[in-house]
Length: 468
Image (tube, rainbow, N blue to C red):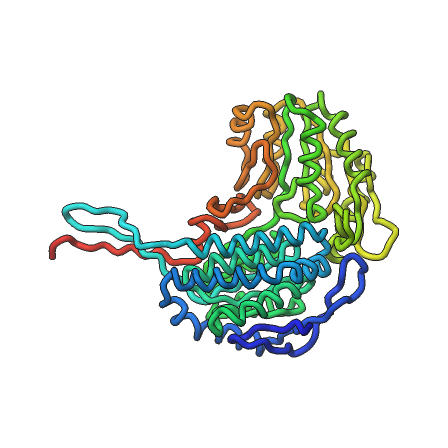
């Protein structure tokens, strides 16, 4: 099929074509329209023109459009899932899960509202808060969850009355192009636009004076540049950035059971999740047993093309990330003990054997950095105070997990961890009604929940005297 841009309600060819690589083979399997600066400006202008009409609709009318969009995406779930696995690499069942989450996100926020609120009502008068849309939103999405994260931005941004220009990562543009094709039949022209680039239009989008807000998900380093680009016009920004999430295991757990849950949390999507478990801390008394369990799980994991039945872990999504993860593993070999994996698989594509490393110092890159791949360090600790201090000694603060037989102990520790979210005795869970956001260099602002909707609006206080 022709993968095109969406500008002002029309599916159009790009100024050039972009090669898209299947990470399971390392070779080109599709091409996609690639925009130039002229087309980017056309998309922004279209979104600006569409804004007054879209904003003037009731929230219910906008929600109805989102509901119909969810229906249309659902109808193409199998097609979009296969395409997602082809360009991103994750196993097909995980791709189907991502598309289903995108559909559910659109459906949930289609029903949500930000009504006029009375803050104060006295004999002297009333104080009200109105939430109004901002205008044109730049939605910039990463390559790890290109459909779900797009749906979050679309749902939150459009339902409150904004219009949007979406720009996917150049290595995973196909599903966003298909999403745009589906949206073209449902949303009014200009309300949602898709621009695909070769990593050359990002700054043109984020600095454009007609863009009122940037919603960006990606690396911390790129997020800092996005924030800089917003400064000149004081654009609103929501930044969901990198994480180095810790799993703290207490001394009262069933090691085999927790090892399985933590391993899954670390290796879903080949470890390419901002909220994946990135470092594991175990009490000295359980350290050897936990390391053994994790090593066994890694050695048994089925690593293969995501389209093959039974695949548990697919390839790393792109060559640059593949080489970065291997480089981090090479350093870890010199500083610790590799007990599983530790190498690329001898086959085409960007496959890395699930890797577990023990006995590393806290200064190792595999501990300090966000590896974003199927490689995990396991670290021993001697006291709760010590492990809390070591976990908090990070520039990141996105999420984390605590595993214990006593939830009160888990809660106590959770309250001392410096991160946006902590889960106790459960892996990552993202309810639509609960806000999500990072601490420190893991981001600014919130997504999901009412707080996430408010991020896409301007609060206005209206102070009315009871009598003149």
